[in-house]
Image (cartoon, rainbow, N blue to C red):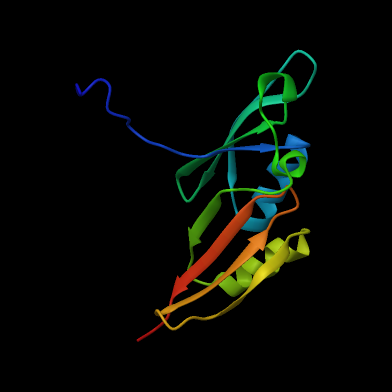
Length: 134
């Protein structure tokens, strides 16, 4: 494999219903910054890029004709997005206040982490994790 074909970065693109609402949710609940937003001629968001502490996260409106289906259409998500945080309880509270549900409660785990899992209002699953002080 040549240096020109080695990926420079890999990041998720979340497929959602109501991309503009998702952009606002991720901005307020997890502190994402909007980097760019592009709409299709019909007004739907074809691509938006957010940044989480400088790391890219993209999203697009659900477009069944293109095979882009959200977890709401699929009946769930097969992907867990993990956030390593300084305070997962605070972020969980912000996400829940915005409409997320706790799937696995935030708790101290025997492997040295404080962790839990939430489903955001768009059906995506997030693992919120922080190192426990030794």
